[in-house]
Length: 319
Image (tube, rainbow, N blue to C red):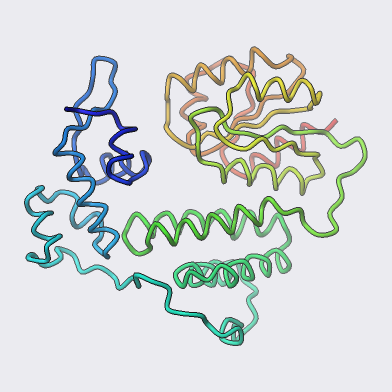
């Protein structure tokens, strides 16, 4: 019996985001649609998802196996068919503890590309401490803004690309995002918020589970002298607005990453603007923000496309 994507995700062990990516980019499967355009997955589709998950976790590139038939996937899983595209060697387990002296680079890291390379290398070793050290060194060398603009954002893009291409495992991506999340939630030593600083409430609307964009917004705002109230991901807009009004915040910033052009999120953004006082600024950014800007013409929202755009919006918003 066909099931919705939520159940297909639970049965296969894949996130809904990964399922959609594999459908859209790699044509791994074609679910049926209901009259309301909801994806529905039959038993065969769920079986394919399970097989694809197993194969990619064992080193196969999704691009090399996505369009194979279910029978071919089963044969490949049993080891009776060679890999269509040679997969890079990805260790299944950490290679073991690395001596601290071996983690110290022979030449001091100075360039953003060097920090990114060191971070990816540490992620592939499942070396949280090495990854954390590389990012802290980047912050020391480049400053908080330099680390955010030149290291964190490019690093996340590269890790995501490596994962989609089968060069890195999902667990590598999870380690990277976990360490970055921890770093961004930790105040910069010695950093103090000025008295009477403008306040920014940061969150993602319900249904938006991607948190790193919001964390980057919060870290960037703090570095520009804002007082930040961070509410985290997946929160109803009524609750975000209630917090902002109780705090008498200067502005609210929401991050929207996925999906693009979703009617439900369009209405949430429209409702958020209606709930907030007209004098309170409302900033929306993230990878999917441009798709919503087109759908909400004339609504008093400040749309930002990148960190530089966010910086400009925050600098203009100061009291």
